[in-house]
Amino acid sequence: MSLRVSLVLCAVALVGCSSAPTVPAPFVADATFSPSTLRKDGIERLLAGNARFVSGHAHGEGRDAARRTEVANGQHPYAIVITCSDSRVSPEIVFDAGIGDLFVIRTAGHVIDDHALGSIEYAAEHLHTKTVLVLGHERCGAVGAAMQGGELPGHIGSLVTAIAPNIKNANRGNDAATACVKANVLATANALRHNQPLLAELCEKHGLDIRGAYYDLDTGAVEVLGEAAASPR
Ligand SMILES: [Zn+2]
Image (cartoon, protein in one colour):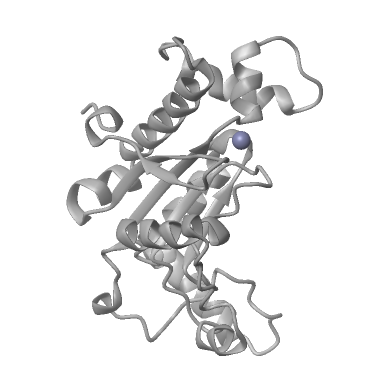
């Protein structure tokens, strides 16, 4: 049984059972969905929103009761954003987005585990979101810890273990911290592009667009990192 069929059946079963509790968002089937509603300008919308944020002219649209009602029974986020849990990098604020606009996955250092991967696959395969942005940021503590190495308590070390291979070959010149953050972004984006079985096929055959980007904490600006460097196929 394909993931798509499984998810649809799962959602239909939940919706069809009157005694079932409220279906937790975002795993709600949307019977009104049509491929014609797909947004293919995700990167442009993200960057336009970021430009408003940087200039101090964020409009904050789509955060009111009307929008809440509009998307209560179905979502069509125009982008999947995978970023760090850092409190200074909130995607809806950085991209001046509203409710239902972004499907967001956050872990420290945007480390991808199976749960994160499944979440990305769900949005790409089931919600048909065509744009994926992996967003690293200036002065990332998780990447900094991976640069330092050494033992860390609890499960924090698992983050360092995941990030370390991504920054191993980063150019540690004048600005090693930035180079390592960008290397971590590019490695993550590249790994997603080639991830089997779902994401690689969605990229190859269905135009899933996975990009890497860097967020400047000082200016608020998001820089999309080069396609060539990000996609060494
Ligand atoms: Zn971070």
